[in-house]
Image (cartoon, rainbow, N blue to C red):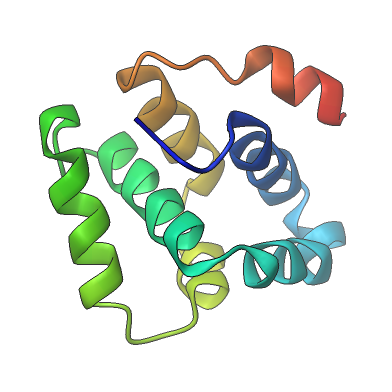
Length: 105
């Protein structure tokens, strides 16, 4: 379903919760992801906030790829409730990040 690993999404979730201390690290982590992983990360966030439905995952990924006008790190870091939206998106897709988040911490 997703090419980006749950662990990578969990790392973004954990770092976004500590944005005051980890913004540079989060930015570097997102920038290091390939374009497909970045698009999937944005798509998961969009599903989590209700902009797309689960069954529209491929459309969300395609939209994220086509409409990327700012660096993905800037876009995601500027998104309110990023960690919650990512968790909700994974959950909607039937993926639990809890174990991965615990390992990252």
